[in-house]
Image (cartoon, rainbow, N blue to C red; front, side):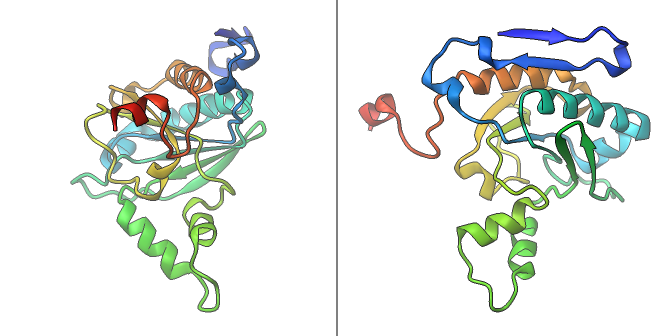
Length: 205
């Protein structure tokens, strides 16, 4: 993998993930439309502060945009025990629509999505997905989970079916743009199965 960083200033540095330089395998031909980063409790989110939030959204959004992603969603790992006034918001970073989503309970999210469906609207995978991911118009291709692979985020329910999971054992406040670059490089070298099995899985069964 080759990563190119502009040298304007540390605060405005943008990373360009050159996925075209990776080995030409089948897995590198996958499109990256939507990246989701999941980490921290809502208390951890509040502790980050306005300035660091602003920097984080700008830096991660630039990485996602340069990798060709149209959407980047940041979501809490779980609600946590501390009260929080965190609310959702959005920002455009270059060509990437960054969505800040503080909902840390996937069951609550699913219930809200179902309640948002119009009475005359059919309940199917397409309509439920549309409500769950809005304002994004597609499901996440890559889900970066901050934590150990032994525990899945309670904030994810629907997303686990097809998204590619990349785990990074770290705390929410430790996340940097470098970690997202590495996760995208990991994703680029995978062969997506969209919930299916590969030959080795079938052999085990």
